[in-house]
Amino acid sequence: MFVFDWRVGASCLVAAVISVGAMFAMMGGKNAKLMMEYQTAQDVMSKAGTEYVRGIPVVKVFQQTVYSFKAFKAAIEDYSNKAEKYTGGVCCVPQSVNLTATEGVFIFLVPAVLLIAPSAFSGGDFAGFITNFAFYAVFSAIVSTALARIMFAASGLMLAKTALARIDTVMNAPTLEITDNPQSPKNNGVEFKDVTFTYDGADVPALEHVSFKVLPGQTVALVGPSGGGKTTAASLIPRFWDVSSGEVFVGDVNVKDINPHVLMDKVAFVFQNTRLFKTSILENVRAARPDASREEVLSALHAAQCDDIIEKLPNGIDTLIGSEGTYLSGGEQQRVSLARAILKNAPIIVLDEATAFADPENEALIQKALKTLTEGRTVIMIAHRLSTVVGADNIIVLDNGHIVEEGRHNVLASGKGLYARMWNEYNQAVRWKIVSVKEGS
Ligand code: ADP
Ligand code: MG
Image (cartoon, rainbow, N blue to C red; front, side, top):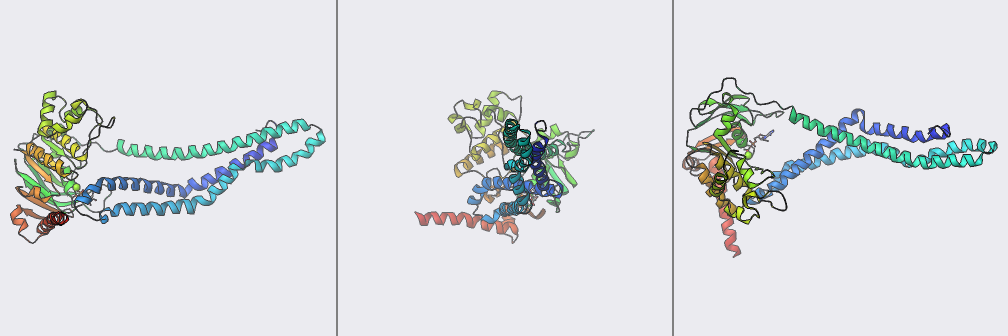
């Protein structure tokens, strides 16, 4: 830039200096924090959006209103506020200056060229002057492209940094503490003793002083309003989290004193949002017990009522899921994951709203599969549809992290508590549907 004429070369740099200054004004100092908040808000919004779309079947089935998605609305509003604050308040002026400077680099050439033009004429080297000028005219265009690239690179770098920070939080997550002196569970019972659990970063505990006992072979249902702590309680059994205080026992041994592999063999779980791996059905089911034979996998699939799924797939149980249009519906995925749990053949089963996303036809099949899975085992089940918990040996009603009621269906339903209210509402919802069908026909 400085070889042909340093003055013109320097004038090309003016734009670069302005541009760097503007970028710093947008992304540096205290605005870096604003930009971070803006990106986080965007992230939260897209997560809430996914949850919203996944939840549509539940809203339809249980006649809930859009108020169930307050979180999504709040996330959109928060994003909108942050976006306006950041783009309007912080970026508007610097970005305008930046674009004007980078797109109009040649403007800075004019005064420099006018300054040296007289000397070029007086020196008589007019041809040389034109060549130099042509060089800088072309070069100024390159400068603006280069500056635009630098800007993209800078924002790319920022995105990469946030992505890396997220990977770091996963990689730095503390590993499960393993006991030096493991003990074997003595039976297939489960017990919570004065359990309190608070999620990292949460202000209030998700469970507080919760105690209950599930005898070997019993079926115990956890019910209650959304957010009551049912899923949290279920996840404490296989140690997805460790209690903040109190104790969880499996077979009369604190879960922390059981070798995690032994615990995993003892407990099978089917959770709300089942995920299948992008591999064959065979491998998906076998994930529960890698040494299982092909025949064992087939009979587990049969017990889980998956025969119709396998029949319609081009390569049967060797069909890759998630490729070439072979996707399974939510209810079908549930059945495959039930086959996984059946193959595992664990004595304790934890079920979280296993039928919540199923259509009626799938639900009937899932109920059959569940019957096979739960027979003769200890079962802790969470259910939206109260009809499925009527036969339970014990029903525990969780509200706001506390047990508010406990007992068998007949006793609770004839009482005046939360369960009786839920039972009435549930029956009304069912009746409402039948009446409306009659009127329609
Ligand atoms: P339920 O299954 O009864 O609907 P959950 O056990 O999922 O209830 O949630 C209990 C409480 O814990 C809720 O207030 C919920 O917002 C909170 N919670 C659930 N999962 C998490 C999590 N991973 N991080 C922070 N808070 C959570
Ligand atoms: Mg739940």
